[in-house]
Length: 195
Image (cartoon, rainbow, N blue to C red; front, top):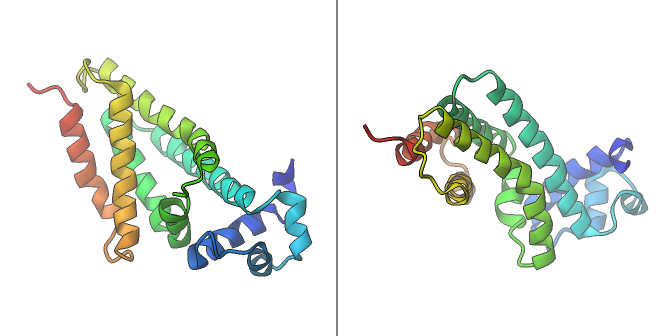
C-alpha cells in the first residue's frame, strides 16, 4: 500500500498547504513536490496525477476525521449527546487546520463530475454515522419516529458544511467551535418529540 510509504503523508500535508494557498487549478505538482521537499518524480510513485492527489487528501483526512468523531462519540450516553459531540468535533477539526478547511470547503467543490462521485463515496461512512445517531435517537424516543432519514441526514450534514464554509469565507473571524451549541439546539429542536 502506498499509504505506508514514508513520504506519502508528507506529500498529502504539503498538498493541503499548496492547494489552500494557490487554489486547486494553480497548484502544479511541482509546487506540491517543492513544499514536500521531494523530487517531482517522487510524487508520481504515489499518485497518478493532481486529481488523484486531491482525492487522496480528502480520503486521508476524512478517514482521520471520522476516526476522531467515532472515538469521541463512544463514551456518550445518548443520541442527543452524540450529536453535539459530532458537531463539536467536526468544527474543532477544521478550526484546528485552516488550510484543510479551505481545501474541503472551497477547493473540493470542483465541477468535475467524476471527482464529485469519488468524494461522495469517501463521505459515505460519515453520512452513515449520522444515520446511526438519528436511528438511535428514534429508538431512545428522544427523536420523532416519523423522520425521513435521508432528508434529516442531508440537513445535518448540509448545515454543518455551510457553517464551516461561511466561517472560511469570513476568513475565520470568529470561533467556529462556539457555533456547535446553537447549531445543535437548532437541529435537536427540529428532531425532538414535542411534548
